[in-house]
Image 1 (tube, rainbow over the protein chains, first blue to last red):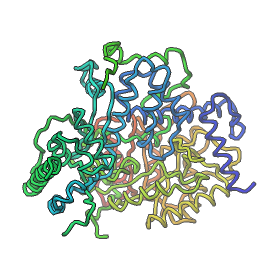
Image 2 (spheres, rainbow over the protein chains, first blue to last red):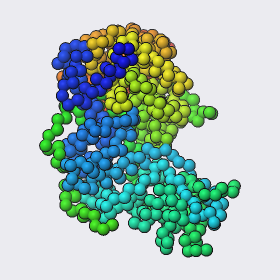
Image 3 (cartoon, rainbow over the protein chains, first blue to last red):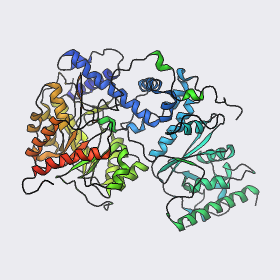
Image 4 (spheres, rainbow over the protein chains, first blue to last red):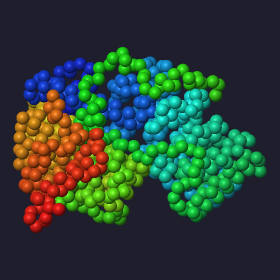
Length: 257
Length: 90
Length: 286
């Protein structure tokens, strides 16, 4: 076995020992007294679990508060077993946690939990998204009337639309620091627009036609395709532009400069 | 011009006027207060714990063996109980 | 590319502190005199957003040290080019005075453990990690510092003392050493060795930074928690180290149970006093 192979094998065995359910036998690769080596190995095992759980707790603070420490810790442990981090940056750990929670049998009495988690991940991603350039309003002004229905907008990397059958924004707000967890609404199917403006993440509840319109634009529809006949989307488009959510556009035809 | 085209034209005109106006008044501090909620500024980075093996404020004092009670959600969801209305026709 | 920030170098006669979110507001308001601010590189990898905006603000007034925890220099996996590219982008943006990583591994088979895991101290591991350090320095176009890590276990296959291993990495690659005295103390206590062996093995000229931090005493040994004041033994070791090395940019690390800024500044002040003594009689201790 080459030196490189030996190192790869040692590391693979070490990594397996840190997540193994029982004794992995890895202590035989360690120097010193076996019982002590096992206890030292356990320091690393607990740290790996704590770091992964801590990353999820940071991305999903409302879920953590909703379900309590013990439940969250166990859910995080099971999630990490199935989906260990695939990125060295722990801030990016856990995009799959909402889907995991939605399917987690022990959370079946909390059918809205996965959607609350989706909203939290959107918020988390908005915080970490790249800056985007501002919309070139001058260029937009130069698009001729015939080209206007073909305008397709590019969105700022931080913009997210979370659509839920549950009052997720109310639940989320009620579980912010300083609130007692009681939502001010008990019903609603919330469509929540999340974006970043002036280095702050913002969230707004959209009415269904506005949410449909924004969803279509975000999927890449042109203005002509996204506009429902008869529904005035001026305010909706104005909100997107004023919030810096539109980062650019294409007009289908060359824009004269 | 059909009504949809007229709508697109006026909506874009509004966006452009507001946008160019915003640029002209350039960076004069806080944006106009809107109805949206805004939260927090920066989260603590998660990579700090990685340098401090054992880490994260006493969360890892002992091995985390699964127990039945870890499957029962406690926390503030008790307040939500059965009060939340299941989705109707959306 | 023209410089975006004023050129700033750490003052070797003063300590710096780790820049952590709970202190952003207080630091920005008070702007205490500090040698430098150190951040965990990965926490600023986003190409935008509030964390990066804060760091840019602090960079205008302070020298910044980028301290990575995720590059996994010693991993048998191929070097993580995505991670390295993010680090290179951040370095181009922040123009840090120092860039450092750990002499360890934290990922294998594409799975990231989020921990600084020790290497076996063998010729093969030495060859491997030296090639990786060289690769990183070439990609970043600059010298990096590598830090000795806390290791709770030792491998039966190790054949090289830790100090010689660290010194040899610096000698072969031209990288600097980030000498973590708390890690040296924790390892010596946990494995019954002498922390001074590490100090003696390392070429003083290669040491680019010193780390001080607190540990926790547990029934299983000392654990490097970065959640307590620097211990008396590590202060003693620090005084000995600066006596041998002269003044070196020094960082007080505190990452868990983060205290009020004043507590951290008091720890940094204590390091300042020791650094000032190392500068000889020409420089009075304030």
